[in-house]
Length: 200
Image (cartoon, rainbow, N blue to C red; front, side, top):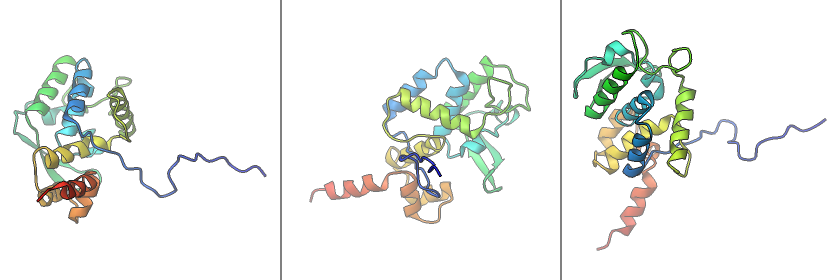
C-alpha cells in the first residue's frame, strides 16, 4: 500500500497559521499607491487597516450603510462571528475611499460594497486573503500575510504608532487578557526586547 505524500511545510493538524500586520508605514503607502487605479481594492485595504473589522464583517457592508457618511460618522453592524451588534466609526481616509469607489463604479443601494468583478456577488473571505497576500508580495514583505493582516495592522499601529494602551485595545478586540492582545498584534517580542534595550 502506497503511503500518502505529505507536504513537509504544511502546518500540523489543528495548528493555526499566524499572519502578521504590516509594520511599516512606508509599506502601507506603497500598497495604497499601487491600488490607486483599483477603487474597490483601495477601499477594501483602506477600511481594513482603519478599523478592527474582521474580513467577514467588512464584506457584509452594503452601499446604503456608507453612501452618505461624513468623517467621524458611525454605523452599527452585527458581527458575523459573535452575532453581537457593534458600532463602527469611519475616519476621513475611509470616507474618501468609499466616495472614490462609488464615483467610479455603478451600484444600487442594497448591493454589497465589495463585490466580485465577475458576477457582482459579494467577495469571499478567501478572495480577500488572496488579495492581501498578493499586495504584500508586490511590496516585497517577508512573512505570512492574509485577510487578518488588515485588522492586525490597525491594532499594531494603534499601539506602536499612536501609543494606545493595551486595556483599550483589549476592549476593541474583545480579548480577555492583555497577553492575548499582545500576541494577536505580534508586538509582545518587540516590546520585551525594547525593555532590555533601555539604559539606566
